[in-house]
Image (cartoon, rainbow, N blue to C red; front, side, top):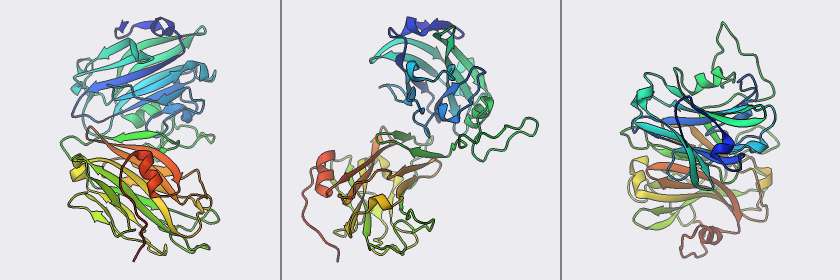
Amino acid sequence: MNLQRGQRAKIADLVPNGQRFTLGVAVNAPDLILDFACFGLDGQGKLSDDRYMTFFNQPTTPCGGVRLETPAGDAAGFAVDLGKLPSTIERLTITAALDGAGAMSSIGSGHVRFMDAGRETGRFDFSGADFAAERALMLLEIYRKDGVWRTSALGQGFNGGMAALVGHFGGTVEDAPAPVSAPVPPKPQTAPLNLSKITLEKRGNTVSLDKKANAAHGEILINLNWTTRAGPVKKGFFGGTRSNSIDLDLGCLYELKDGSKSVVQALGNTFGDYRDPPYIALDADDRTGTRTEGENLRINGQYWDEIQRIVVYAFIYEGTPNWAEANARITLKTPGQPEIEIQLDSSRNDRPMCAIALIENQGGSVKITKLVDYYRGHLDVDKTHRWGLDWVRGKKD
């Protein structure tokens, strides 16, 4: 079924089971950077619970009724299970918002399509001819009426960006001032949404950072922090006083587009190179934890097209594994992009090595996947991710 702008239909007429499907979204607009979101709204059309906004920083709803999942051939997507949504959620609204300059009139073409078991069962097509200087779109709505789930092809422009959409639906945005004429009442039950920071909550969660128009990626800086649970003192990455004198190291496996593979780490003095292959460098080896800037992996984004994939890991070179007593996380920063955070929120104190994240070159975009898997050593990580390197026992000078 091809839906026209303003047309309505029953979900059961689009998807045989009427409950579970995936929405794929694509927009042909090379000069625009777009963020997609699904707003779970109450009977008054309001975001009464901020946790029901599904977007890059919240990849799933608490009930699991909506989660980020992109079908092949689409730019974004949402897996929907209507049966899991609480009774307070009466409608889902799919939106797109600009990140940066531009207007929706620049869109060549776009669609939202219903997918059932990998098969397209319905779609709504739109183009920039439908819009002018708008910076956001409300594309499609799924709503419950008389106990029956239905859909409506909206195709409505919206003058503000993502933050304005959140405010329109009654949500709160972190650090955004409330309008003087109509202050938004506080919602103590949920934290404000942070549109400038992405936290990958669960193993397997992913996010992609696209290139800015006509520009290479800037420096990709990977930074590992660790603090004790007993106090708020920040220890650089692994710094400060430690009762067990652990020597923790940051490193990575890398594969370039030409097929060459190796590691960047302090062990073996393979610190890498920022300006020449592999275009990845470790800045220092912090053996004591007292170096305030800790350890950083720097990826030269100017040569991102030469890199295929990277597995970022941390390992305990000396000392007894004590992951459970650490509040560890990595942050990934690159200019003009949201900060990405991955917390080491599970632990295996019988294993000294943690594969934290997989970073892949996906058509020029930087795709980051949360791993947080624990291993006995480098060889096990290699086998899991099929690197095929030869390993020997090493030590530091």
